[in-house]
Image (cartoon, rainbow, N blue to C red; front, top):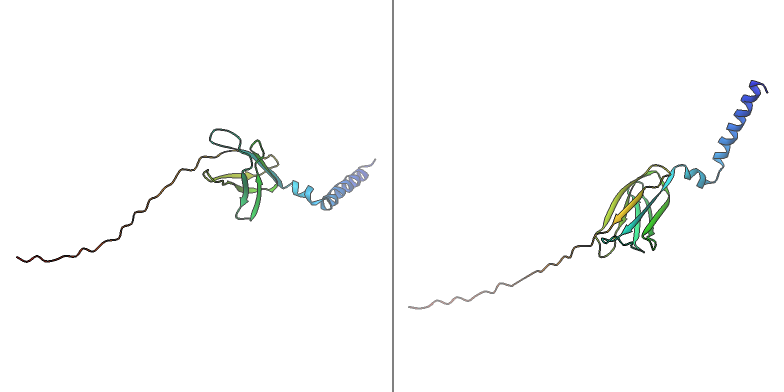
Length: 140
């Protein structure tokens, strides 16, 4: 095989790969620029919390995704475009938790989120109306 025929074959293969990449399913192209986020939510005692809502957001791009934790407390977000995000876990009885995470590769960052009990807050408002006292002058 001559050098020019070898060059043409290599060019043809490169062209086929290039054309194929434009006509491949969108999910395959997106996979090259998207990653995942995973983690586990536990309570203060270390026990896994199931059914906890977890949100992944980027307020600049408008990206939002929601899921709930599995029986073992784990959660996963797939097909997440490369960007910085915040993971939000807000559930009654616990303090709201927000964690920053950067998705920069196909290797999924793993978060360990430990929820803290919400502090009890009580407030007492005492109001008293002022009563006007009548003043009488005593005569001497």
